Image 1 (cartoon, rainbow, N blue to C red):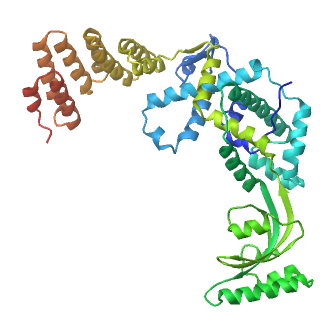
Image 2 (image 1 turned 30 degrees about the vertical axis):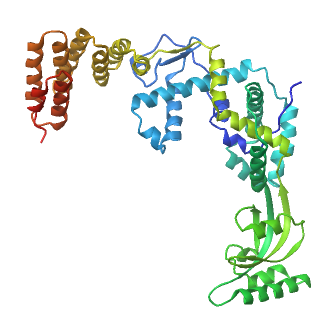
Image 3 (image 1 turned 120 degrees about the vertical axis):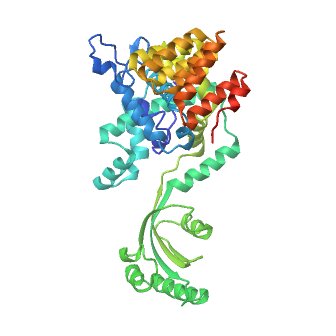
Length: 456
């Protein structure tokens, strides 16, 4: 039997894009021949086919919504053009649906209900002690209810086991330093303390020595059995906890200084600590409850290994090997056109952009077809698509410029120059179009004509 790795609930969110999103993703939807015109015009309609089945327009649009939410504040993504973003979207949709099918039908990894129950008992239930805390925890983690929580954990454990096996197979390893650093961070965030505190502040009216003297006096009273709550009310300068009897819950390391962490996180439950010097003053702490959610280091190192794998080139290599067993076909001509274009297959790209225009009547695709045929040096096709363009949009001077270039390059230089001058006349005082005309003259080697174009 394969070794099962036990994982933190927190990682359900950490690798959500690869795990939870896949688990919740919709199934492939078979094509329906009875489609109406409105459906065929929708974004993503019959754009992508996996194993002979189309991703439905509904699913495609939902994936686009998620894609937008994921990248809407990503500067690098915002600088990309629409076509490049859609190309990335297609890859993400493909990967998601392939992984969904692979995990469910091909991975041969199963997690039993008993294993899920054991996981919940060990790592989930200790995080809440009543129904209110349970509801709050479910909300934070995005679980609708207990059944949904168990389903997500089961899916998560299956996927993590697959990833762990793949990481091992592809030779991904952790150094001792990586393991130790990751485990120290893990401990900092997964050992939590409920405590009561009294802060004797150092401020404009109280020196460090005076604060220390008061703190020692308060500490002595507590040792003698005085009420912590009463002394909080009388002495504490901590505005966040004073009204609550000094109570603070789920305190973790890294926020109060090394001396505080050393004292508090090495204490025992019920221990009253001597005044701890902080930059803001002296703090007296009563440790009430220590909540340790940490994993053994060896176990946690397996979790870190999976994370490292998911962010490595080895993961991409593994994913591509899986995709070879799937028939993946981009069927939307506009998406196929861009892929042909970026792979410098300009002749093919021009034809596909024409098909995209015929399907959508979006003239942007005619502009892209012009650009593609120009790069392919197919002047006859360039002239034809330009004529389609300016018949639909006589005010778009780019089509006249491209046509003139095509005519000139095809050997009819006199007619090409005549068309360029006509384009210049149509451009009037548009700096943009005049700039394009000047660039085209220069591209044709007609520097004298280019210098006649006044861009001032």
